[in-house]
Length: 215
Image (cartoon, rainbow, N blue to C red; front, side, top):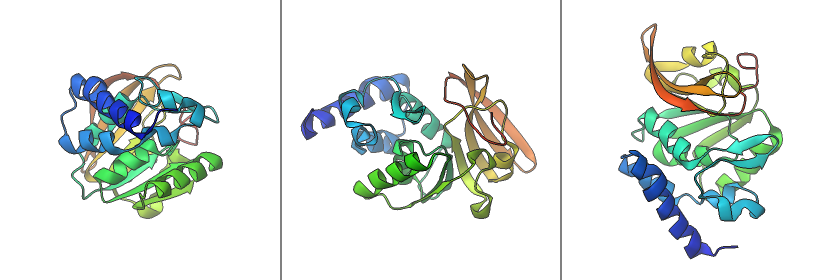
């Protein structure tokens, strides 16, 4: 297993070669991704691959996203540090950690209890506490805490989940993969009153968004 310094070198290389080199410029985001210990969010057997340019299995049929995809989706939210963010699909908790360092508070929904518990343990280990985790149907959002300044969905569904659109604050941004089960398009949707402005951010591939407003 690599030692702490090896991981620090791997993080710097990840940020320089996989993220900054592909056009992500936000200095806060680049700094946070260089600091968060991604290897702690995967099984010990996969720690040596944690900073590679691809997703990894986290069990339960789920994955931790490719580092660049985490950066791209986070960058698209345009976080300034004051936002209340809803995350659909806690998964490993890595994306949750990145968000928590860049906004005021994160509310995160995961449908698989064991993943949520594991993510909570790692977040506490690295002293990230401005998060609320819950187990439930993420396609319905978290209406009790709405509205949200930003919503990020880390699973792909067949259409834009209506509850998530409704839970956006005025000017809020939703970043979500939409399409078939094998390939999706990543969208940023911005709320303007009762209108929703969609932007195509490119192709992507995610695990299924399972729930009433997903698959």
